[in-house]
Length: 405
Image (spheres, helix red, strand yellow):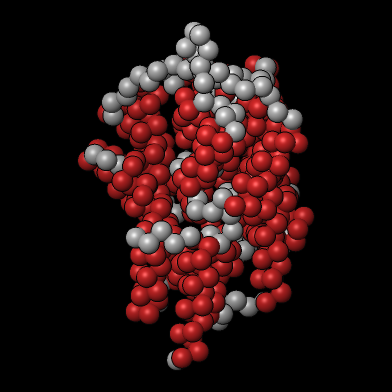
């Protein structure tokens, strides 16, 4: 709906409580990953409730894709800001995140109670389905983000660099390389300017950016100087949430390096939780709540789950709120759009490397495993079966194969 001047018109603000209830319903029903979440959001907020016009929603999605962190969660936080200021941002995040976080914390307690997971057939089925889920994400992202040979080359280089430097340095280096190549060689374009109805002051914005970089740079120094395990854990999850481009699946290699390599979480438990995360609605970043629950050294249990959940999502708040008042100016620069193209291409390579290790190497050990993964991929891609159902079918199939042997 437009006013006489032709500018998009936005409805009046809502209470944070109403924002929470709307996002809680979405958090209980939004299966299918970040792309599906964005579709749910558009139906709810553009078509059904008319909380913002199509032009503004497209702008919010563009901003969330440009910055690191979970895309759908950042979109939700920004919509919360636009509807009810900072209280609305917190309400939107809590409503959308709480259902899957509680489910994965409960699953973490179940995994902890089971003890040694290495021989569980149902667990192996979850790991097999994770192969199909990540393969689908790689294919979908490659089609959208690497449509030409230049970006395919960036993705290939990132795929090679990531396992060659098996640490966060390799992953971050691939993203930086993609940004530099994009800035130098990929064309940018100017998009139409549509101002957003911002309900926060620039003081909040500037403060958020300062806090983001202060914690990103300060936490590793504080953890190293004090030897505090709590600070090391919070830094690992905060850094993972700060450096992930491209959505929830791309956080897998960062979290695997942050939790499995130092021995905080076993690789079997890690992949079990990743498979279970496909069966719950809401953002995949709530996987952090599961990891905090099953972690060996404290913090663990529900308190560890909440601790790690806050750590991985805190950068999303800073990065959603901080650039918001300046986004309209920033996105007009073609060079910045070129950088974004290169970063997104590198993300595809990062995810492809993760598909091989640890996902494929930990799950596919026989022709039967490969067959289950292939069927799961066909169900996801061709038949559009909900991921939660594919996860259940994969666990049942692996358990049935183990019984028949």
